Amino acid sequence: MPTLRYAARILFTGILLAVFSVATAQEYPRKPIRIVVGFPPGGGADSIARLMIARLSERLGQQFVIDNRAGASGNIALEILAKSPPDGYTLMVTTPTITVNPALYDKPGYDPINDFSPIALMATTVYVLVVHPSLPVKSVRELVALAKAKPRQLYYSSGGNGAAAHLTLELFRSMTNIEIVHVPYKGVAPAVIALLSGEVQFSSGTPNATMPLVNEKRLRALAVTSAGRSAFAPDLPSVAEAGVPGYENTAWYGMLAPAKTPRPIIDKLNAAILAVIALPDVKAGFANQSFEITTSTPDEFAGLIKTELVKWAKVVKSSGMKVE
Image (cartoon, rainbow, N blue to C red; front, side, top):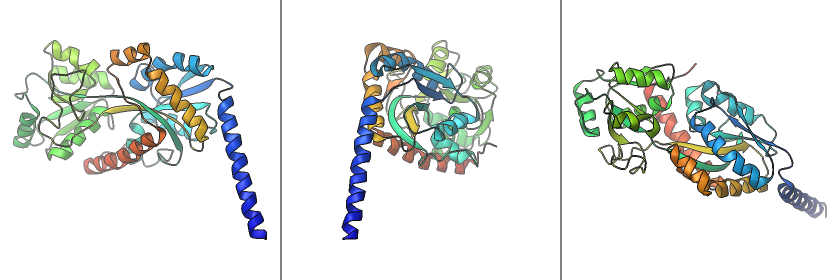
């Protein structure tokens, strides 16, 4: 009965692997854990990591160390993670760049589906659509009408090709069929300065970056980019509510591990992350930086990545944007 003996060996091997995987998860972690961040200190992904590491260390009994590996819109860090051992000791706080870059770059250095094991979604933040006060519009509908009346005469700024404001407003352009001109700058600060000076007419940014300027009457806010209204700008309608049905774009932050990391370790990390996010001091830290707590299972986070890959591939293709 060779076939039965072979089947029995396969079953026995599977049982051994399952027992080993559970035992490994029970012992995990046994040494410090590195969290790779694909952006410089001070950005959203870095802030999320720093808000959580002390509490994660307390919960799991090991030190968490942040490793900032900025460059190529997060591709450098993602490639590092993809090539790391799948043992739970190298993780990454990722952003939507993992779903945008495969369309922007010919060779991003990783496969967004097959090279990673999603652990948990942690937070989202909205963007605010803002215009220079001199622009004669006070609503999204009026902005769309003006852009249609003056094709390619309205300019918007961003921190560079593929940056958040670029993607936010290219999605807006594609869903409204308007012709607007993108002006990329070398960073968010120059893009904001250009908007404040009237060099460009509109842009988008996080509530922390835009609302103080709106309150000072230096910019005018039209809408937020979430599906519904945001707690960080409750008086503003969403873009969808204000005239572009179906529009939604938020920045999200999630934790990844390399592909083939044992599922019990993934589940242990997911439980720890969700427990830490629920702590009052962590929740307050998130709120202070305009982050809205948004959690998920590993499978739900994997589904989000797949959905966003399709969404941004269409936007990038229709815009013709490319990064060398």
